[in-house]
Length: 422
Ligand SMILES: *Cc1c(COP(=O)(O)O)cnc(C)c1O
Image (cartoon, helix red, strand yellow):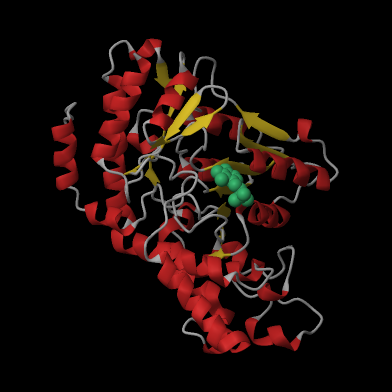
């Protein structure tokens, strides 16, 4: 699309946007009495207006039914995780039996590593991206130590080439191949939280498998942001949170994917709890864990119904909008932001964009590396009602989310940013 640098042009794009109605389905926070310019859907998605209804229904059923609600509420609590399956499966490109909503992201990561990181004397190394989200780093380190190994000769953290900000796919594949004799696990953030790089999941999965390793992904910044095909790509496992692009609210219930070739193997080692036990026999409370088939067999505890109801509200919106349409708008919306930023004269003096320029290698986030005046610009943005994200030491992350951000939002952001720079 040929973009133009004007408010009128941005307004025109909004008018023609087939998804424009979805913005009206969200609460937009106010700053100084005006709707803010919200660009942090990658940290905490906005609250859908429908969420209150879904949560209130559970509160009402709890009030009127108490324990009987497990069987007799409108969405019986005993089976609640099942109501999320269809929506989650669609979002991550999986079969419903391969996904489950449970716990929180880091907990799920530990559960998956317990099952899928089984180092031997010969195969024990892990390849991941350098600078992964802290929680993922801590999870990997502690899992390595749990097996009595030393992270320093177990964990291979891939860095971009000198002078580059993101990893080249060929370099990732090369490292996997070079380490194929000792490689146990390949694990990446599907969309890197800091740079916004969307890795080539298909190529990484294929290379990992060719090397004889297990391949997993953290979808924290990918679920609800980019199209995913976990089943078709043959990914072994994945985990995600639901409070970022999925808009399920702070601390919302997370998710996990286990490919069916593993999910239906009851012999696979796992940390077990009663909710993963055969549903029919669960209340017999007998000795001897027998996992349910599929991802359900990794559940530990009974389902968090209140946060799960907020997830259902959010999944309904994704179902209505459709990931294909969202992706289409997202690429234009983020492309427009990039176009405007690059139109600022001598912008190379002030900032560079870390996120890959190719729309297929990113989601909706741009990470702007500030070369000058970073803190000042960020303070100015905040003052003008922009909610964006500052990452030490010098990066501003901006995420125009196609469900609720507009082209006018993007244009206003650019105008404020430009004024603050010059
Ligand atoms: C947001 C995020 C987390 C947060 O973990 P929680 O367990 O949900 O607190 C972890 N990893 C990545 C990559 C993230 O983006």
